[in-house]
Image 1 (tube, rainbow, N blue to C red):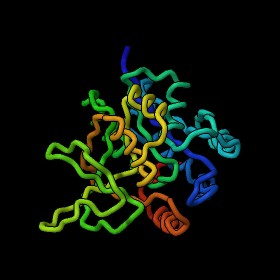
Image 2: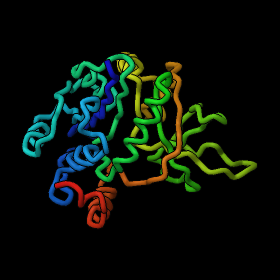
Image 3: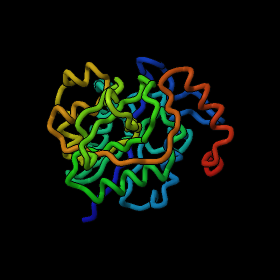
Image 4: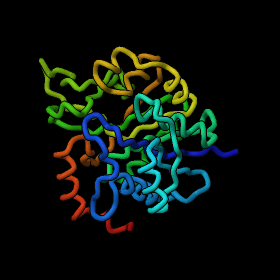
Length: 253
C-alpha cells in the first residue's frame, strides 16, 4: 500500500493573541479558506495519496467549510496547540505510522503551494526523520514572533528560540528563521501529542521544542519565500493589502 500524505490545517476561534481570526474576511473569503484553497493548488493535490483537511472544534468554522465546499475534520476543544489538533485528525483519517503529516497553519493565508509541496517531497525522501521544519535565511533577527533555528553543519536542528541566536558575538552569520509550515512522520506526531507540554516549550512558546525534548530526529532545509502570517491585528491589515496584488489569488475563487 502506498504511503499517504496529509495536509492538515488547524484553526480555532480561541486564539490568545487574536481571537476569532479564522473567519476574518480577506478578499471575499474567510482567512482559513485561503489556506485550504492554496494548498489545493499543489500539482498533485487531487491524487488519492494526498489528503487535505481543515481541522477545527468550532461550529462557526465548520459552517463556513460547508458553505465554501471545504473538507473538514471536527476535533476536540481539549488541545494545547495546533499540532495536537492535527494529531487527532490524522488518527480520525486513518493515517499509517510512516505517512507524512504536514501542518499548514490556518492563519497563513498567503502560503505558497510550491513550498508546501517542497516540504512534503523533502520529508518523503527522508522518512527516517521525525520532524522537518523549513527555514528562511535572514540577516534581520529582530522579529520576536519568529523562532530562530540553530543547527549543526548538516542542518540537524539543535535548538529554536525567539531570542536572537546565535549571538554573532565574534562573527556575523545569517539566521535561520523558523517558517510556519512543518511536517511529522505520523508515529512521531502521535507520540508528540501524547506527551504534556515541556518546560522549554512553555518558556519559548514554540511547539517544536517538545520534539527536541523528546529526542526527535529533527531536520531543517532552506526555502526561498517569505510571507506574512496573521498573528496580530496589524498583520491582518498588511495581509489584506498584500492579497490585492497576490498572483496566486487569481488562481482560485
